[in-house]
Structure formats: structure tokens, C-alpha cells
Image 1: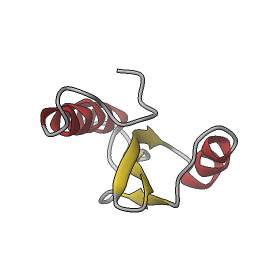
Image 2: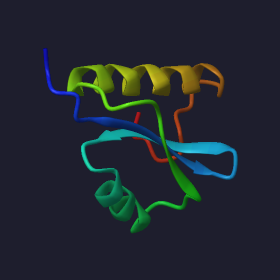
Image 3: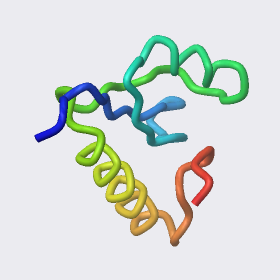
Image 4: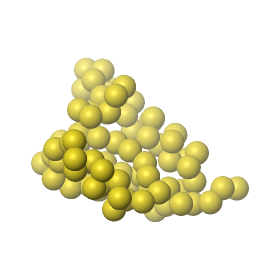
Amino acid sequence: MGTRDTYRYILRQGHRTVYVGITDDPGRREGEHSADKVFDRMAIQGPRVTRGTAEKWELDAIDRYKSGHSGHGPKYNKT
């Protein structure tokens, strides 16, 4: 069993999801995103999980977003 050290997060602009991601350091990652993405807030999703679980969540979250948005992913995700 792996270490539960990975956070799952969503960047939001108003009520709109503009990015879905994972990180081991939310504060650092939020700062990195601030340089090139427009968003109001970073919303952490649930507790820390293993890297593998976080990666699966990220893919599933993007797929769910696409299914409700004519096949388009969140604005800043390259999918």
C-alpha cells in the first residue's frame, strides 16, 4: 500500500471548473498556476490519497466533465 500524500484539486473561476489536477503540495501548486491560469480559488477534493488513486480520480474527473460539456475538457487541462 502506498503513502497517502497526494491531494486532488479543482481550480474554479466563479462556478466554472477551469482545471482538474493532483499535487503533493497544494500551496506551491496554487502559486505555479497563478502565473498562467485565471481562477478564483483552488478547491481541495477530499482527504489525501495515494498517487495512483489520485491519478485515477484525475482522469475520471476530466472524463465526467467532458461528458457534460460536449466532449470538451476543462479550459486549462490538455486533454
